[in-house]
Length: 499
Image 1 (cartoon, rainbow, N blue to C red):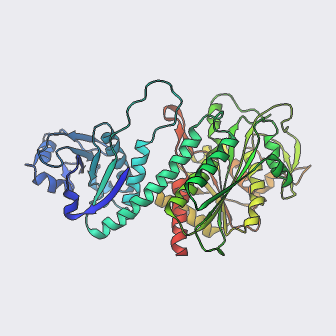
Image 2: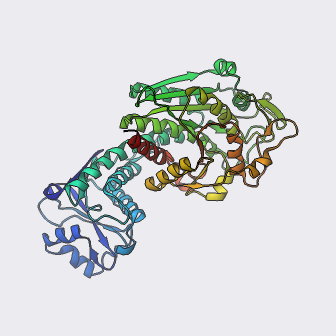
Image 3: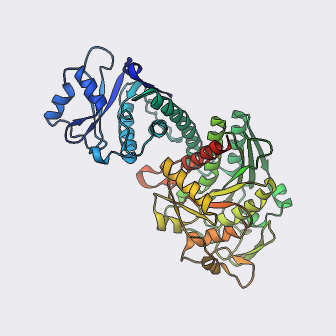
């Protein structure tokens, strides 16, 4: 997909379709009024007849406006002017692009950012447009054998802005948004694959493929013997019931000064989670192929960072394995020794993600990171608390918490601050080991973070629980690509500070 932002007369060049916004109450945007004045007030007449109510997300394609350029016009409802904000702008973009994909249009000019929506700077107007286009054009890598529908013709979008400064800012947003969308595609493609295809070894191959695509990336994949030599007992306890060998995937991106400490991203890579001996309810268990979404989001974020050539140093750690029951599987009541030397009583084998992350948090110390963020589909409790809208965000570092929360707001990939207090850690006490791997149902998302905090002492660390936001269920089942937009926005702002 080609993206460009223009202003002035350039915005009126020939295209196959022009996309204009209309407010409720028959109110045309400035761009729509200008266009309509050149075409015998066709749109105004249509609105007077009541043929287009202009509710938010409504669309109407006019295919015979004139004989010259822009003969096709797509009207998009923006809702009430007073409520036209960032959310409404993104909804209008999504509706417009979906309508365009149902036509033979290859190139369209969007005038939806000509009048800025409340709270949307030109840069984000561009970025959201690129992300929305990628989302609409995304196709799941399914394994169906029937004839596939033809791909949409749309391959070029032009964003029209009010002036040259806004156009330059929007172009930066389009470029960044295209890189973010590329990272989201990496994440979604991996997460949407079935677990018999996307195994731990497949994740390792995907990481190596990224390193071939981007020279700034280096990848190392440690096998079982190397993991055993590292004494990662917590990680290895999870994989005992699977015939698939575990992988410890280590990525490095060098874009900053050689002496600059890296930002570390750790992704949970459980490629299928049956719950182990603490077997899950069969209903919905197929969705546990998405339990490696944290790992996939790390790979996607690295793809975006490399495409953007961010002037930062990054480290990615992905412990990848399956959690299955067999005669060798870890049992409730077993005690395992982590890489840190701390012992853990495994009360519930379905609380496995924190075990593999615990050893990853210990391993990442050798890189002397400035910041560590782990990303994991960690707890159903987080879904109960926040639903499918916000990721859970937990950290003892107020500044890091604010950075991540702000990045989520800007990216519309939001995270909600949750407490991380010693009172919750009390629930993890064990009579037989240094700690238990679960603290019960009450505050389950928080006690899981408290468990991880015991392995993050001395690190500037934050935890993102993405169990509610990483994928959709039901008829729209599939990966969302979150939280790649949040993570890349965070890195972009860090890069600006480092510049």
